[in-house]
Image (cartoon, rainbow, N blue to C red; front, side, top):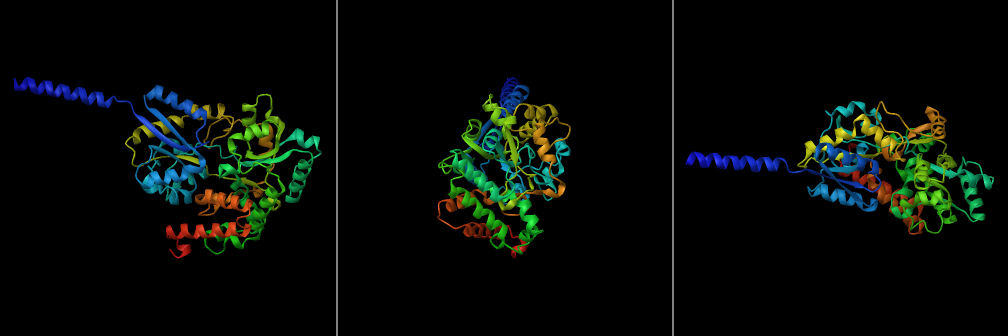
Length: 427
């Protein structure tokens, strides 16, 4: 009888264990608004059909995301997968990936990633992030409505004075010149650090000097001129009367309906406009670089929204499977083919989907006219992005002066450097 009882109990335990093993897995994935395209969610459904693993996408408004993420990481309550901006400084300061993320260096897809992009997702020789982002197609440029420019005899501005004159002409005929969604908290910041190539052109080696703590933002006259010019554009009404209330989700509407003549968007912004407004051809729009401080250099950012697997996750193997699924050639191509805002990806062997005019625009810049944006080239800038946004908004509303914006950036950089025990700051 005892032997029979033992067999029955063992069978029950095996049955319970089998049921537990078959319980479906749900991966939690937290990301900022705009970082997970519909095409990826569709791939997530295909992944679930293949593996039985469900992905729960938790999308957080951009102005709340980093605070929530840092709180969850600091309290040991991270989601299985979390999104973050790549860039070595961010990986160390914002996410402490060496403690909070899984080392992905041995994953097969690593060898297929663009080396420059991979470098920004790595710390001390180890890869911690998967950057599925169109780092070239998402280059930030000014998209302009060709018809509006032609009707008002306007040409592409190549200096700040020309941009200002263009805005004044448009205002004179009742057209809002530039859509700038300040209320999103992050977008208006782009006008400042994206001009890193111009800062380097005027002052060669400036990024290196900033990283070595040999100079400051507040000491640089070109940076001050950019912030002052941004303030002047706002004061002139170039961003319209609702800039402080406008948010990024209305970008395609603002440009697609012709309410605004220009907008700072990704290079592939016209495809997004056409996707939302099929009667508006993407070819209706042209591109030019931000001409603040008379910039004529192309701003390149090898960093971007990146996926990390939380080191405290109970489903690391399942998350690795999800990353493997996303990086299959057919999955990567699906992202390109089914997302109008994602026309290239930093992986080898894919067919890119840029318009001829976009490729021609990129090709028009010689190597010496291309450079890395300062949120990636300079330490301790990107981690304070939303703080810079608050300072610029305060400047727009006359609460602080342009020089104070730069001084605040320097103060926060020093605090972060000291917290990181950066030797350039005496750490």
